[in-house]
Image (cartoon, rainbow, N blue to C red; front, side, top):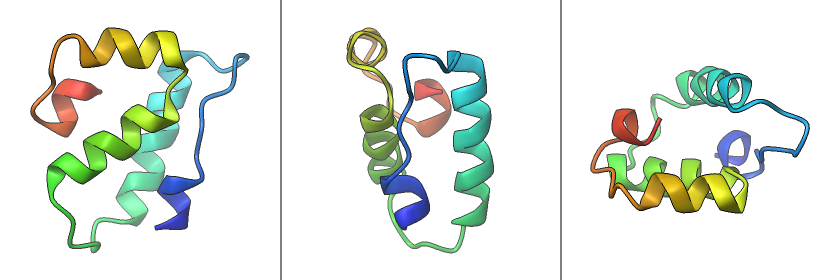
Length: 67
C-alpha cells in the first residue's frame, strides 16, 4: 500500500512517465482488495494540483478514465 500512497508527481516529471510509473506500481498491488474508487483517489492525489483539477473536472468513474 505504501508503494501507491507515497508516490507523487514532481514538477520535473512528464505526465506520461508519471502514469507509466503508476501502472507499474499498481500492478504490484493487484491483490489489494480495494474498490476502484480508492485507486482513483490515490492516483489523483499523486498528481500536481493543476493536473488533478483538470482530471477531476471530467468526473472519472473508473481508474482507466482517470488515467
